[in-house]
Length: 111
Image 1: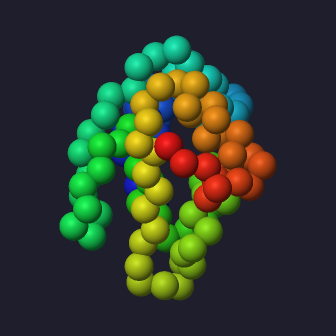
Image 2 (image 1 turned 90 degrees about the horizontal axis):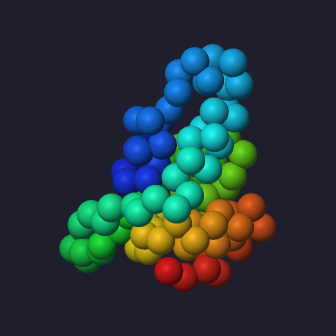
């Protein structure tokens, strides 16, 4: 699994002392610290199609963060990857997408 954009920023800014004390909750803290901050856009090309995105997850596993099934169409035993792309960059869009992940409606939610 590889995360680009917002995911990478959260990991880069992660407080390692907090992670040592709280474990996975430190990532939640890092995510909530991003609220209100602009998320830079980048260009990604997948199968010849270009996208502007603020988050991309390239994965061979279904779960993200251990608890959330974000890539439903892939299996670890397959040789392909699934790519999840968030094309919006406003923090409130991420709240909407997070709600869609929690309620298992991500694939019904569009940017």
